[in-house]
Structure formats: C-alpha cells, structure tokens
Length: 244
Image (tube, rainbow, N blue to C red; front, side, top):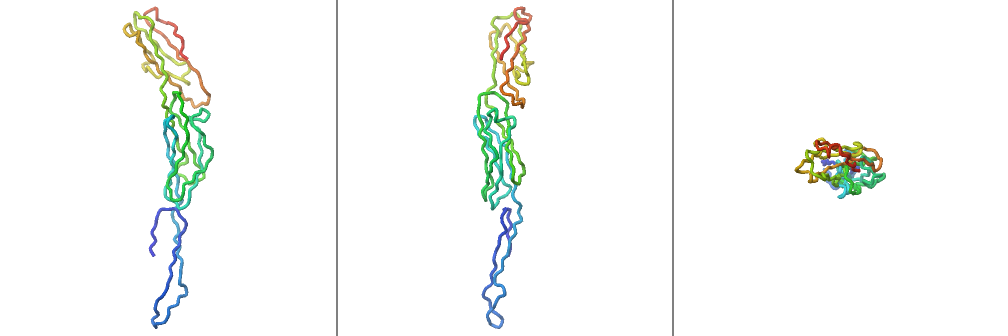
C-alpha cells in the first residue's frame, strides 16, 4: 500500500486491510488466522508556525489590520494569544484602542486570520506613530508586528508680511524656544525669510511641526521667536511678538 505524503499537521491515521475468499490447492475452504489488519500512518509534519505581518493605516482611515498566517494547514484549530503594546502611539494619547490579552482561533483547515485595532483620528499635525501587536502561547516565526499610524493632518503655518515698504532687504530669522517640542521646518534656508522693497507686501509662509520625544508628557507649549536684521533702521532689531 503506497502512502501519499502531505504537509498538513494532523493526527495519526489508520487503514484496514481485510482478506476474504480464496481457494486452497486441494479445493478446500481457506481459513485465516487473522483476516483483518490495521496499518497506522504516523503524522510526520510539525505543528505549523505563525507569522504576523506589519500593518499601516492613515489615522482617519483605520483600523490597523494585522494578518496572522500559518506556515501549513492544520487539521486542528490553532489558538494564539495577542495583545496591543504602546510604542510612540499610546492609548494615553488616545491614538488607538487598547486590546488586553485575547485568544484568537484559526479554524482547522484555515491558513490565516486577522486582528483589527481601532485607531482614533485627530486634527493634530504629528509624526507617524507606531504600536505593536504581541503574540504568545503558540509556535511562532515572529512574535510581534508593528502597526504604523500615518499622520494625515497638514502642518500648521504662520503667514508673515511687512506693514510698510522697507528701504532695504529685511531678513527675519526664526527659532523655536524648545527644539525638543517643536521646530520650524520651512523655510529651509537657515529658517530665514527675506522681504525686499519689491515683495514686502506679499505674505510668506512659515511651517512648524511638533517633535515626538517619546515622553508621555501631555500637550507642551513652545514659541517661535523672530530676529530682524536690515540696513533699514526702521526695521533693524525690530521687536516682533513671539508666536505661541
């Protein structure tokens, strides 16, 4: 009897072989000491391993969907425990909905299952943030996956212009009071904007962004200060109110 191998994790299986009938050389009836025998096909496939894939979603288009895949089919249900873990995305900052230790069952014969993690959209401009899904209590190729929540909000901007025509170029240098919390990201030329006698009345845009410092310290204020230089004495060293 030829046995056909497969890659399915399964229980040992049996087949029966039964002898019946037959004719003796003398023409008599054939009798059998054992008419039926049982053959056992021993499973030689290891329990399949689990792999969990990373996931990415825009913060206003969630959820994060993590796919768990088996390395091979199984005739038995496969159970794994999962839970969320904070990264730069945290539940304290209401970035996503936490999931405590929860069992997930991949039904017999299935090769994959998914985990959904709800994420919370906001209007705050921020860096992309990450959290983790952690797996336990199973045979795993990898035990964690990264969920990336992509920012989809526009960076805040400040519009600046002069109130009167200068007699010479006016350079305004911009700086943050706390570069660990927020910085100027444009203009990129030394964070300086320049007004001339020909463009003084046209607004120029300054873009700022907060810094993800990996510290759960709530909302933090910072200011953008301006330093004015010009050979026009009306503008040189002019005091400009800080932007908060």
